[in-house]
Length: 234
Image 1 (cartoon, rainbow, N blue to C red):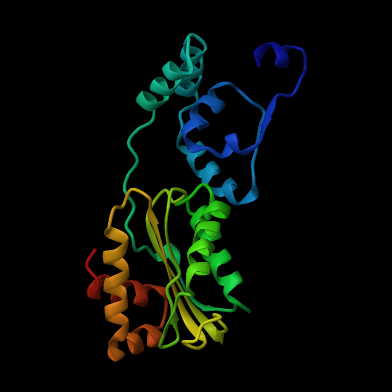
Image 2 (spheres, rainbow, N blue to C red; image 1 turned 90 degrees about the vertical axis):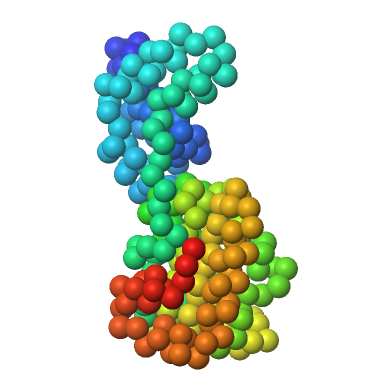
């Protein structure tokens, strides 16, 4: 890269590797001029880059150049990357009210895209595909104007509950009727049976008329978050 720059040449990388958080310190340390990736990954990558120390990344790249195998480089990256803080399952950044969607496709796409924007997944398209694979088995409308699309996926970085209360009901292609509230569960592939516990607890709560009415009557996203944190235990 240094030689290319000395000769006035631009150096970049095009492809999904540029959006992989594990390799960002190394790519930054190499001094590349540009990282190209799919647009949903850009906000999370920018956020991570702001947290990296450029000098430390350059030293990482120097050490990587001395490695004799891919295994040595992977070990180097593991030692360099700090353990990531665990994010809560419920968060204000994933709750929306008065959303105007025309169909279930828009709702699921929006919620998965938001997880990408907030760094909870680096693969929003793949995550969305996992949600749809589950949806194709059986529709996730549960009645009472509620749908709970869900997946257990390798593509989710931080397990999350995403909520969208809609401005008007939409067709969820379900015998249970139209939907006004979407509660999407995206849990990590290593969660074991936790996804079943989360889903079951939500389903039991939604049978309660008072709980449902409180969700639909909540004034804003913060009110919904407070209600769920009070009523649910994960």
